[in-house]
Structure formats: structure tokens, C-alpha cells
Length: 369
Length: 130
Image (cartoon, rainbow over all chains, first blue to last red):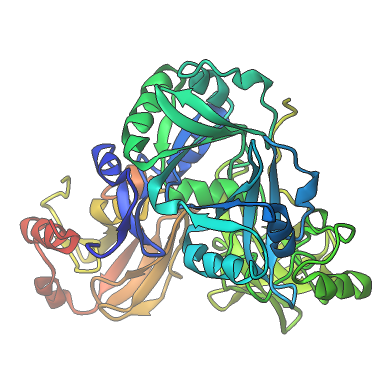
């Protein structure tokens, strides 16, 4: 544990009773009170997550848009300041280098939020494609803290700590220079839980005090500290992809069913040709969501998906869903088998269990603004 | 910790308690606490014959799949069917209603190789690195 990277909240997690694990080289809590309890708190009230390990790159300069357009599949030129746009970042084959959020800054430029485990790889990728462009890429990750307040009570809780009008912020919008509990932050109405909520970026030294302030402000609303376990079950129910599971250097956004984040009208970008070819010809494999019909265990990443006696795919993520009290999974199968309602097999420790393909996302929150 | 002194414990965190000629098996409080919310127990088949240390059954929590090993050699004669409908029993009452199975030991002498409560709790502390 000693040689793991620590977020600014390492001591806070210990104070709140977090069970610390090695998460891709980071010392982070997998749970506090328990994954199920934390999961349900986020669905019904609110939860607070440490996401300081996420990476933040600032892309600035005359050609900032040109660089961001070159490395993303989604059309970032559609974004005006204050907007957040989700996009895969692809290689020439259309495989996913990472998936990111591009936050369009006031005064030009972008903050790219990338996955913790990919920070170094992404920084090299982004800067290696900046040749000939008038642009500066800064990796601000080490100096940046980030917490996520998620759940239906998030707005009420966070509003107690700021004068900024959070009610007028729509989903996937953000505000810079917002004072929260007296600290200078950037507040985005985004998250990785399928629930309403906010992600608050701050200077690393302020993170602990910000965390305590939010916990205190939400005490009467039932806010609980949440670990990586609940973060995973929540994003999984919302069918949000996890890099290294649903997405990687080989899988494409077309195969993953994320065509809505791929633009073919924005001009050229890395991977466009391969993605267009795949879209035109149709992908060979597709990501499906399934529900276990037979009782007999929980689907786990890596388990073979079968049809008759043949292995036809592999589970990318699987879990017990605390919201539905069912065992659900996601995985890639041949495109012609990816039909909602169809039955397939799942090899659980050598025994074949029946599963049924269902519509994703598994969980969709009730209509809100 | 809350490990009763009326039974023995294995290094793989199962407990074993002799009841006449049979012995009851479960996983310890320490084990269930580390696993977290148990959502599925793949019970051993009745009649299954196991050797001490062999895989007995599988316990799945939200976060992990864990093998449960036989604390003693013998034949499985009863299983706790209640765990099928309510796997969380294993979290709520690991040493009582959350028992996993009852075995008929083939070599009761093996019990001597298991740990008493005090030794087990010390073992848990050392394993946790405290």
C-alpha cells in the first residue's frame, strides 16, 4: 500500500472508515458502510465520492478547438462555453484510447476530463497529435481535487454551500469560478451514477475541507460517503461504459452502441475512416445488456457467453443490481445475436446459465429537468 | 471482534463446530465483513465428499467471488437452504442462522489442526497487517 498514489482525501477516507484498496495504482476506498447501502443512498438521497484520481488536461491556444476536434469523435465545435460534451477518443482503427468529457471554457479552450488509469497514455496521445498547432496542453491532474455529489438530493445539499444558482444549471453544463464552502471551484452537473448530481473540481489542498463541508451540509438529507464499489454498481446499472471493460484500444464506439457520440459531419479526425467503414458495413460484434434468468451466481467480467455449445462472447461487466435485485451483465456478442429478448447462455464456473438480452440502459432515472 | 469460543476456525476463514457426530460449517464474521454484501451462495451438493482444504462451495458478494474451503474432511449431509432465498443471512448472522452446511467428518482428528478463537483473532489481525 505504501507505494500507491494517494488522492488529497486519503486521510479523510480513513477518518470515515473507508476500506482502502489498490485501484490501478491508487489507494482508494472500495466501500465505507457497504456497497449496497451506499448504492441505494445515491438512488434515494445522496452520496459523496472522491474522484480526485481522474485526470484533467487544459487545452488552450488559438488551435485548441482544432486539436480537440482531431482527437475526439463527437463534434466539440457544437459546444459553447459552459457546456460539457462526452466523447470517445479513438485511434486510427477506431479503437478507443479513452473516453472523456470536454468542458468548453469561458474565454476559449477546453478542460478534458480523462480516466485516472489513462492519464499518462492520454497526455502522450494528445500532445503527439498537437504537432503544427498553436496550442498548449497542460496536465493539471496532480494539483486538482474532485468530489462527486450524486443523488436526487444533490442540488439541495450543494446549494447550501454556494451562492451560484444551481437550479438553473442543466445536465451536462458547468460553471467556473464558483465559490463552494468558500473555496474556488468548477461545478459541473455531470456524474457516473445515472443519477442527478454534481462533480466539483477544486485545488488539491482544499479537497478535504470541501469534502467535510458537503458531508455536513447533507447530514440531514442522509448523504453517505461512497467508495469505488458503489461507483461501479451505479454506473453499471446506468449502462455507462468503464474503460478497460466495455471500451479499450480494440473495441470501437460503434460496436459499443455509442454512435450518438460519433460525428461523421464534423470533418476529419483520428479514426473517422475506420468508424465510417464499420458503420457502413455494420459492426461484426455489438455490446449487449443481459439479465440472468437462471439462479446460479453473478455474471463477472471475463465469463464466456455461449450459444448452444459455442462460446460467442465474453462478459465485460457484470454485477448484482441493488436497485432491481437481479443479476445483470454486459458483453460483446456477434451482431446478429444482439437482439433484445433473445436468450443466450452464460458459463458460470463450468455450468451454463440461461440469460436474456435486455434493453440498455438497465436503469434510467425518473424525468427531471 | 465477535467470534464465538465454542468452535474452531481455519486459516481460510471458515468455522467448524462439532455437534455430536456431525459438524456444522460456516464462514467467520471476519470473512463476511471482508466480503461485504453477500448476494449468492452456491451451496455444496448433499452427499459431496470433500477433503480438508478442498473447495466446498462458492460465496458471492457484490464485489467478489470467494471460494469456501472444507475445514475438515467428510461428507456433506445437510445444507442451509435458507441461504438460497436470503443470502444476506450470511452477513447478518454468520455464526448462527447463516451456517452453510453440516458434514459427517471422516477423520475427526483433523479438528486439532484448526484454530481456537483467540488464535484465530490474532491470525486475522496479523493478516490485516495491524
